Image (cartoon, rainbow, N blue to C red; front, top):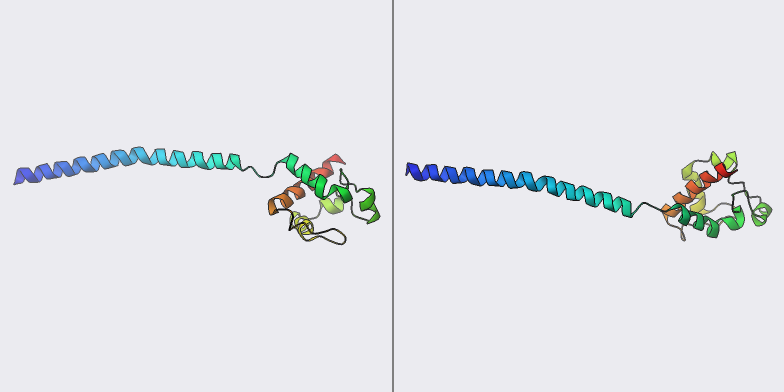
Length: 133
């Protein structure tokens, strides 16, 4: 009986050791796989690229704001501000995004034709226009 008890304890210790060994091997592998998946997902979805944003600006904005933000003949006839000006450049990002989304004065709203990411990318693009002045 005592021998059987010792054998049972030994089997229990072996089983515990086996479980701990497997767990300590599997856990780091699982964490590594999750990290790799996260990194690959972030690389796959970097957000709107500059070329796409420039294309969006050309198709949605340049007709009035001009290719460089200074304003086209149409835009100047409507007295739109120069996007490179300190007035526009000192406007908060959130306010610029709201203007693009909802429109202002003669400017149409773009919230139904542009995603939030595209609108925020355009705000960033407007900030870059100041450097081209």
